[in-house]
Image (cartoon, rainbow, N blue to C red):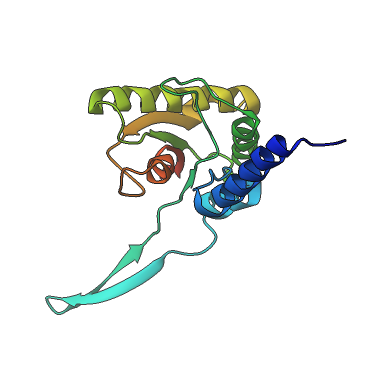
Length: 184
């Protein structure tokens, strides 16, 4: 195939700009799916709680320090401004969560599915949207696991609990997430 000189220059410009784009532009990162084992490691208690003792009024008292059993996932994506789950990655992540919930190590445990949004939009709209998204995930999990729906509770935090601070798209993407919290 013979390439005309004018096309060679155009092709060279496209190739060079593409290389600079790969080196300098922020490339969107693909969401990382949490595996069933990663979910279980975060949601299933594996050790006794740490205890700390202190003296007060001549008596020694102990308190248990328990780390929250929770995990964030940014692999559940939604169509912009809606509660409609978007993409294969999202469904693969929901499947992994469903398998973890069905695991005997989490038998009988209850969970809160908490939706989060970024700071784009009003506080009220983000709160409502995060609640709708959490409900959508709960409905999907109940459908996949056949567990009693009372084991799962949906809530929305809107933009009130950011994971990262800033207004870049990367920061906002970190804040758009679903959190799975094991309830006591």
